[in-house]
Image: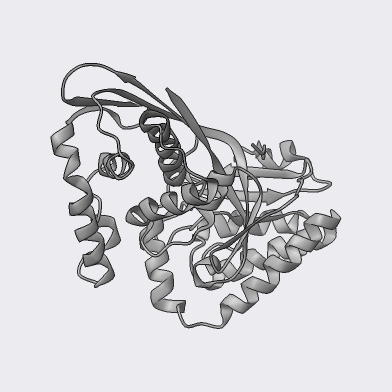
Length: 322
């Protein structure tokens, strides 16, 4: 049995979507793939291309949901940081499986070419693929809306008070607009001028970054400015107006800098891109510590990506949608 789910990139609305503002995201060609093979016994062997492998007893993992729900309640009550809700990445896998009726011994394979911690929805994609797999194993099929809600429910353990944008994009596997938890599918096409650069793994997790932004800007009016940029970008993308797209991506970057999630190193690179006639922004949570911030989205009309790579000493990859 096999299942898969795509990664995602946010075109506009990082962080602000947590406060009910709109966000636009697209599914990307990079994916998580999972498969399961039965065998006898009471053990689940998990083999991953990133975390290595482990063996878990079915009895052991059956108690994981109650423990993690308790930890999450402690987080909500400000008695536990979000980074300590999960003690191991395998906890989230176990939680997702047990929550969706999994109770079989065998071998679970998980492979992914989605960079982890880079703002590409890696956690949500793993959860989505696992829930789809559980549906095949148990014979209990669910609607896309139910899948979206379940992915979001499990993902909260990783990111805390996050938004619906990751869950929506990996579930529907189409460009989406999320506003106040309402998901709207969009008919967007992106031209060949979009590129991404992986600036490295952020020192702060998505959950930690979201929590810090909430502490400083939770009651700020800045989210209205984010909303205006996102709505205007949607119209610019529909019209394929490159001048407006450039202006709006730059405006989005400026707002992200204001809330403190763009490390100085990345800000310097984006500054050079803007002076060359392009635009760029982080397209995930960014980071409130260190010099890396995950994936950076670039719009480079009439600019040679090869020359940009050489001048900045970075590697650019074309943005390919699922």
